[in-house]
Image 1: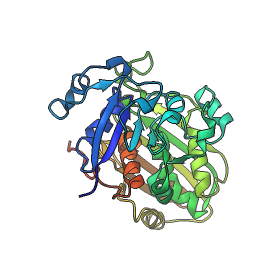
Image 2: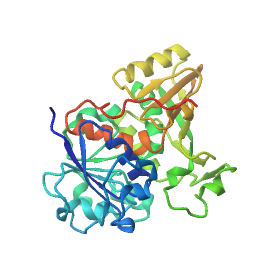
Image 3: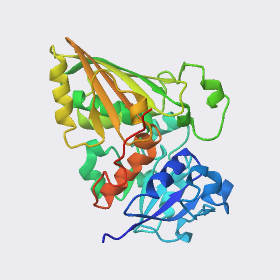
Length: 344
């Protein structure tokens, strides 16, 4: 029997931490050794995440400034606010791997990072040790990585929608991405513009031209191929709890039929179990609570529309982190993640 992967979850009280717990408690190769949350230290996990009542006896620990003070683990999963991981990763024991769900290590360029996140990258010496964790694009690199920067939810939906076309070299001119997110993407703590009662019957754009996921999208796609011109990335709040839906529009150098584009995407994702090419349009309802990203493609001559949908807390966060963890420890990347959504 394969040895269990010993796991520590840092920052387990938010939505990302909750999803990590939900997934890993049923992962056949995982053993959660500890979960931290300063605000809830000493409380049973099930007292905070009531959906987990009866499934775990774990209680939250405080997060020390030196992570070597915690029980020894094989991998530490960081589900903490932006800025926290960069001060803690360097205190991990030498043999412990790490996956960071925040934005701390997604952007290689320190100046771009500071502009995107409004803070200095204080752990720049560690940046070179992080691999960007899109399994569908960088599977082999992730398998060898010690540290992985888990991508953002908008970034995941956008990169998976655009990568096959960028790789093809058939794209020309501007690329326009119109992306929408549900309220859980703003975290568990309510704020004036992100609290669900303010969003439940509303729809609006935010952070035009300045969303922090744009630099990581461009950085990732530039590794796939050449971005021919400007990538315009606009984000919107939609009145649902879970889900990302990205509408991407591209111009091509040649006329392509729907079948041409569909075959291109099917070939590109032939070995990617969690990308499904669907007819007409994806629907966030069919990917909700799953690690799938559904993609549909449509052509009108030299104009291509690509639509992608995923669950921002699973494929856009915790599920992708588990997928990365599986690769890092040499087990099938679908382990613990191969389940459908609900209907309805």
